[in-house]
Amino acid sequence: MLSPLFLATVIGVLAYVLTKIVAARRFMFRLQNAGLPMPPYNTIFGHFLVLGKYMKKLPADVTTNTTFYEIAKEFPGGIFYLDLWPVAKPVLVLNTITTANQLAHAQLEKPKNIEHAFQDLTGGPNLFTMPHEPWKYWRALFNPGFSASYMTTLATAIVRETDVFCDLLRRRAGASDVFQLENLTLKLTIDVIGAVTVDERWLSQVQEHPLAAALRTQIEWTSFGSEINPLSRLNPLRRPLLWYNGRRVDRLSTVIAS
Image 1 (cartoon, rainbow, N blue to C red):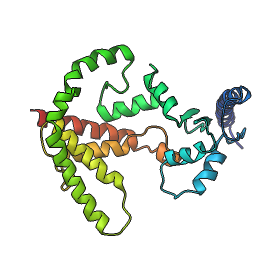
Image 2: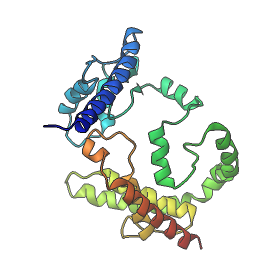
Image 3: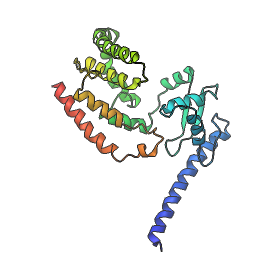
Image 4: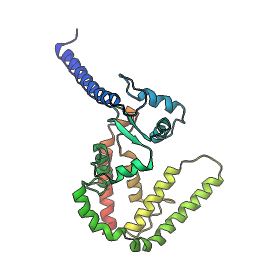
């Protein structure tokens, strides 16, 4: 016979989940009743049924953004809402230059999942997620690094790393097999970062470099809260690995800076 404590725990958990479901669905119903654009809505599954229908039409390894792009074709206005709770909070998808430009110029706070992800990537406050006032202060300090004249002095270093990328791309293209660009472009990005920030050639595109490898590991394990697979989203190894690898990045960065 089940103990009263166990039954109370189960009832409490179910009540908590039900409360969350009702709150999430109520918000979407308000949007729907207001006539705001969204795909057909299911009270139980939200928009997961719609998402699943479009994902079946696409290759299994495409990004979630590709699925959103396909759904956006049903909305000529380029704006629609999606409810992906409990994987993520409801999202407003923008698919036009006009709406994207409005969002880019609006002084809005970044979502918490974005703040947490960039905290893992950068190890602290950063220009991407800072509130407006501190952002203005720090952006002013970095202005010389973004000036056109200074960027021109970096052109040679950037082109040098890009030349390695182009050579690798030609070799892979000549092999007539399908390959992912992401791995190649990520290594190129890291080499450019090394060239323009510490004036070093890491050559991670052609050989292993400890700091470049640590940065790649940090990127690969960082979660932006968009994983559909709950096993990937709730991986218990993620936090300890990010903590350990973050300390490794700090240590290697200190060595290079000195």
